[in-house]
Image (cartoon, rainbow, N blue to C red; front, side):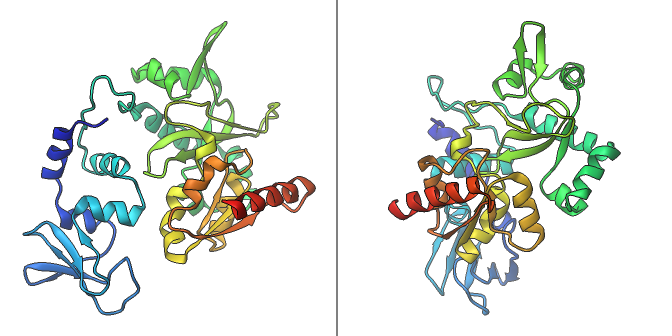
Length: 314
């Protein structure tokens, strides 16, 4: 649990204009700022932000509150998720109760490894050719942060040479220990970073291009990564999901990327697993219409039928 005094300290560091302007365009209007309300459709601005009072209010639909309330409503997050999101946005270190099982995991190492993989992708012509042959544009590569995991020794050397905490790397599912010592969980694979709903990098999906037995692998179960409760691409799609009141669920990473390229920007995917009851709370946020876009083969049709039955009964 986050300490109450830590939350209060965070609140004291928040500026409502600075926070809201990261989501919508605000224009100065006297002592306040105005915009078209992001919570209902309008063409004449009635959404007012007061820097003096540190609140916002819409005279059209009546919504209002402080920085925390805005991010909660806009991002559809829980209160703890919102606090951690705002802390991250403002480089603020939260303090947790010492006996709390929710003590925040240090994720800097996984973020740096993601950057490392992205740089390797850019410098590897064979990997880039493979992605381009699949029809994926450079814009999508950057948007979805596609990377490339090298041989195991290169990832281990990267971690050691930059003095990253190897225990954190193990806890986050980047590396593990075996009979021959440390090894990377992602070897010679195209990587697809996976984010939580609050925008925290929690793991990777990886596709082999060198003939490894498993075509796709995901990060192992960790404190942050539970593939049965995550949807690939959700952090990118969620703004459009709430605006269009629609979510498209497909089978894989490349399906999501290609659908977004084609303009279907509410697409997400399960992580190599069938749709389960654990996915429902995330799918139901904002009560969007759920569209299943699975493969047209026998397995895809069976999975779509099973998912549709579960959705109809939930």
